[in-house]
Length: 541
Image (cartoon, rainbow, N blue to C red):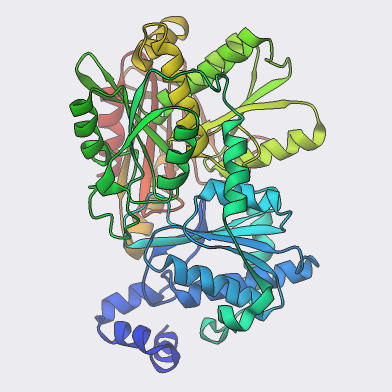
């Protein structure tokens, strides 16, 4: 490792060398003790110098490995679409990406400015490209950035597709020597794209509406959390006739997220400004998208209260609405299927069964849902209706193959308007769903454990849970424990434990693939949430 550090201190660019020189020995160790890895959301990590950080060199090395794979597949002329968000160094990393591809004679399409992750997915399909890259760290704090790879269907690469690329990456010994062309040097190998793709994407999103042209009664406050959603979400909602007021101070692209306490829609503090504005205006909803605009959070204004819906709740409401409207119109197919994950509430399963829709479960990560869509598309046996995760991500129209907050914003606002015309809020609809299918309470907790010692502690937590199987929690008997290190048929190997209870509740435990966290998911039917939280919190102390 010391040799690696010396090599970077002697051969990196001047800014990187200066950064490394100002670090303590302990800090340098953390930067170089391993290479940054691919997780559930691709390569994501802290920005900074070193092999265990996101920087121009680790981006170049990953892209060089990807380029070798593209050439091996004979796809150099099909092109790779590259998009980026508002984060620190995102434009630089995007230019490094296309510069490495160009140095290998590979064509790329670079978006002219910030674009959402779902539009990247759409663009890959629209342009007939071989794949795509998006530079983003999604909802992570500002010190993070990341690198996600997409296949020709616009789906994030699944582990089997990543494996040959990782083999090529591992064969690159020196990230500092990867050839990178400037945009001027790349010439026609880099094509700048933008407005035409935007227009095609907006048209497809707007085509999802059940009620185009009908006057809208609801008023909506919207925050893009300083990210990429500002233009597309406002454009689509305005085109659909909604009355939308933005949280202006959170609309400007800002890598520091200066006017939001947290850019993650899963966290209540992300909504403080939007809720205040919603109450002042008497608006019906406050919605927020994360920086790359693949996740949507929703706050309902009812009875002088502001109620934040969980991802499980908003997903269930939207799914219920879509099925209701399809049934009304006679367009609900007999072979419909909904995809969701093993850590998502079982409420969606109950809704699906009531409407005669089948359900298929995947591991965490929307790439597995995208993979399922492709499998059934090729088989021609089932019709995709909806896909969603508890982490505020869903997909309605499969012209995108990742979660899409632009689609979700449009259709959830349409649902709110549809029900308001019946004298109901989305909270009323949620209670109707509970009355019909049973009450489900969900909760996510996590423990952050940073660095090498943190990774070892997370591994120890998982090992301890495997070594000492739990049989009962809070008076609820565990019916079965599923260990995805020895997964059921149809699932890849993953470090996930799923505890299923006799009453239909479950608890799942997994290390995060994108942050230094161990996550605990609870889906509880009826009583018992507090006791479950107390037990699993104790495991992590």
